[in-house]
Structure formats: C-alpha cells, structure tokens
Length: 291
Ligand SMILES: Nc1ncnc2c1ncn2[C@@H]1O[C@H](COP(=O)(O)OP(=O)(O)OP(=O)(O)O)[C@@H](O)[C@H]1O
Image 1 (cartoon, rainbow, N blue to C red):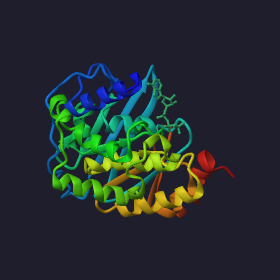
Image 2: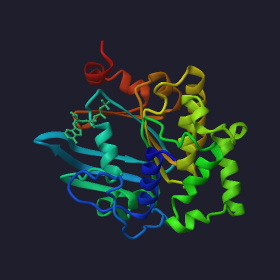
Image 3: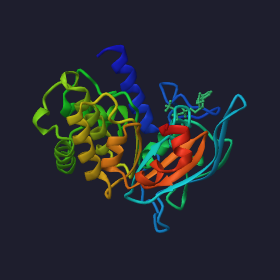
C-alpha cells in the first residue's frame, strides 16, 4: 500500500470514529482524534425539513464569506446550488459538514439535531455524506473492495481486519453496484476505471453508509456527455430515498435534474426557484449568467 493509501485509510478509519475539533477550521485528516462514535438514528423531518440553515455567517480575516445565509432542504429533495466563483458554495458545505465553524447562526439536521454541536466525523456518522470534486477512490483496490471498505470504515481497526460481509451487507453492496452501473466491473481495479466511473464508485462508497443527506461538489466536472447523462439518471434515482444538495456549473445537467435551484452570491441566497425562474432573474443574469 502506498503512503497515500495508508494516509487515506487512516483518515477514513479515524473519520468514522470521531474527530477532535479546535479552531474554526478542522483538518479532518490524521490529526483527527478518537471521540465517541455517534450512530445514525432517525432524523426528525416531521416539520418538512432535513436541513435548515438560519442567518449563518462566517468571516475569514475580516472577509465575510457567508453572510446571514438562510436556506432549507426538504426530505428527499434534490437541490441544485449555483453561483459565481467565491459565492460561498464550498464554505456552506464546509459549515454543514462541520469542517468550518460559523461565527453565528443556526444549522439543524432535521428539527432536533443541532449540527453545530458535533464534530466533522460525527456529522458524517449522523448520515451526512459529502463528495468532493476530485474522486478519491483507492486506485489499487477493486470496485468490490472499495465498496466493502466503505462499510469497514464504520468499524474499529481490529474489527475491520476480521470484517466479513453479512448477507444484508452483501445484498446492499450488490444493490449499490447496480445503482452506480458498475456491476459489470466489480473485479476491476478502480485505477483502470474512467473518470466518470470513479466518480460513481465514490458515490457508491457513500451510499454503502446509507446517508440521509448527500452533498456533491461539481459531480459532472470532467465527465463525457454520456457519463453526465448517466449521472443525471443516477441522481434522479437517488432522490426521494436520499436528500441531495448538488453544487454545479453545468446548466444542461442542472436542467435535467433540478426542481429547485438556489443561487448564492456573496455568501447569501440571491434567488431561489425553478431553473427557468432564476435564469430570468435580472440579478442572477447580472452576477452569474451574464448578458
Ligand atoms: N479558509 C479560508 N480562508 C480565507 N478565505 C477563505 C477561506 N475559505 C474560503 N475563503 C474565501 O471565501 C470566499 C468564498 O469561497 P468559496 O470557496 O466558499 O466559494 P465557492 O462559491 O465555492 O467558489 P468556487 O465556485 O470558485 O468553488 C472566497 O472569497 C474565498 O476566497
């Protein structure tokens, strides 16, 4: 195993065990300590929201990257987030996942879980999965082994060495393989997959943990048209069972998948509505879409 893989393996095991927090921004890396494991339970969505941000602000060296940001996501919703470079999209996801602590405001998962009380790894364990733009699959392991590893990451180091899939987990793995269109490639090393297939595999690794909310950062960047179309199908099949927040710049992709679009600008919501509504909003045209 290369040092990179070992590093990543240590990160994933540590991530599932809970990370120590200090300061505004967490490393989430090997420095993460071992805290109490938070197990995913029921998220109370009886008020019609799986995620709720209210008046959230954060500044970096006096620059207000997120400025009284308020938005909510309904259970099973697929929300697209767009906005110009520097609008605060990544910082918003960092706040939801506990990587960055806001200076003020409220962030709730369902109506009872105050996410600001939890650390980054604990938030992941509560059922919020995040996919960064660049795929980070284990290139030397097969598709199967990558998915299996996503389950092992929930266990302690010793337990993961002796880990065997039980039949429910085997069924889940088979179902995820079908969902991500990689059933025919199960024994291929991930390093031999196309860019799009690696992205799907990473989404599959998140799905193995059955997250309630998935945050996806530019998932179709670098994909071929065919891969982009398949990813749209994949996301449409996930919505309903999961809630998704997708940050993207590809308007064709957004057109295919979106019901509601949120436009961020200077750390706040500039507009919200259907894609057609926001595309016709003068302020959105001014700051993002261009004339
Ligand atoms: N840790 C940090 N320290 C200082 N400034 C930061 C930090 N993180 C973000 N910023 C600044 O906050 C602003 C918002 O950045 P952010 O990356 O969230 O925007 P974005 O909408 O994701 O942009 P892009 O589409 O380019 O990814 C930017 O001006 C950025 O430079």
